[in-house]
Image (cartoon, rainbow, N blue to C red; front, top):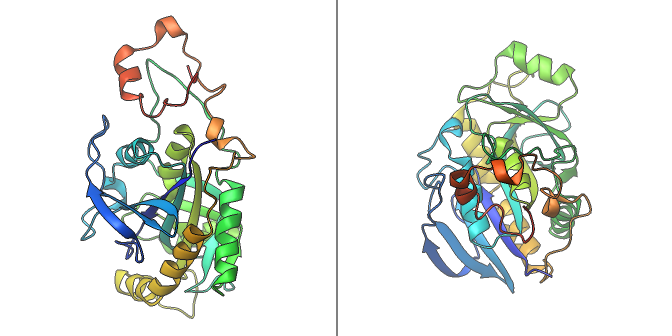
Length: 291
């Protein structure tokens, strides 16, 4: 069995992990470029955690400018087994109100300007994304929210748009009509890359607004988003602290196989694999006998 190390990726307004003890910072080099920030290593209770602010301290990176591959690779090199992504989102349903935490389990990827895979020419791989969220990890987040009396909903579909602009009214109405639940700008390709890296992944989507479809609410803007995020910072900190304090010491095998996603994914014949790309994939392929 593998020791559990939990990676926390903080989104807009979440630039630190309160309660993290024995902190040390380290910039982790990756062959994909520079991660968003230094990794913050520490622990809460007996659980080791690694925190990474997705946009960097000071929010210097746009959703399209984040090096998602470097972030996931750095976390893999740090020994992370489970990733909890925290991000702001807009809601398409009146019952998913600002301040609610939505533990989504599906994604629709509408991004187009991002590198979405570690693999490519020279080593082709196709992983399953039918169920992108690790159910045991999602269940532990839901249990932590319940224990702390934090309002949350388990399940939902997250539309990831390219941004950085917010939705047009036509887009917002179309996603709502399609039955989507929330919209954000950062879950993709993050979830895809975590699957390729064979790490369990789950998202805490913090509702900050009603996008622009709701006739009784103002259109979304940055000030309103940050206001709600800051108001819920305490809940986010309590949720993560409870999750980490109650986390099992050893990584639990994922029932949907996210920690063995590459078992049958690589198609390129061994003799045809590009040595330079394989070198870059060294951390991603660290599990024995992947190739």
